[in-house]
Amino acid sequence: MDTILFPLPGNEHLTELLVQKLNAEYGSATIRQFPDGETYVRMISDVTDKKVVLVSTLDRPDAKLLPLYFLSKLAKELGAVCTCLLAPYLAYMRQDKVFLEGEGVTSSYFARLISSFADSLLTVDPHLHRIPTLDTVYDIPTQVVHAAGHLAQWIRNNITRPVLIGPDSESAQWVSAVARQADAPFIVLEKVRHGDRRVEVSVPEVETYHKHTPVL
Image (cartoon, rainbow, N blue to C red; front, side, top):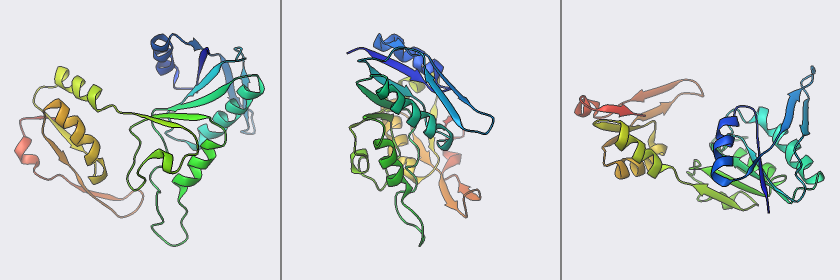
């Protein structure tokens, strides 16, 4: 089965690299907004009997969700065999439990929404904290790519005397894995949240590494 990749705006360079690595086709589509803010999509490339991969990192996810939904539905109407969402960063993993009465577990809602239009999901090191695996909340096949080895290799090749810094306690699982493979020390910042935008941060043992290069 032939594979064709369509990038959302801002994901073109990554898609070009993937097309070269996968010997796949770079899809052409039009995505724009009408003056009233509604989304217009058009697939120019032929997707008949092909596997369609929609490429979009999901920072600022709300603005990207409708284009992804429309493109996935359109691809199947035009004869695509299946659609895969390739999202290097997967959004809505933060709210994985009810912290305050009346809140929603939006990680589950978002997962069901993605599962309603994509046939599979590929992402890089999702923020799994209280959710053990993506399969717990997603109803479609999911695959996780781990970046620790590649990050560690880059650090070894480019940074002299590195010290890795994790932004909070939840990052410890990732920063420790990279540090171990890079043969480098690491510290984790201590963060206290007083709201969505007011955060108190302290740096433990920072004086120990004053001759090192910090890698956040």
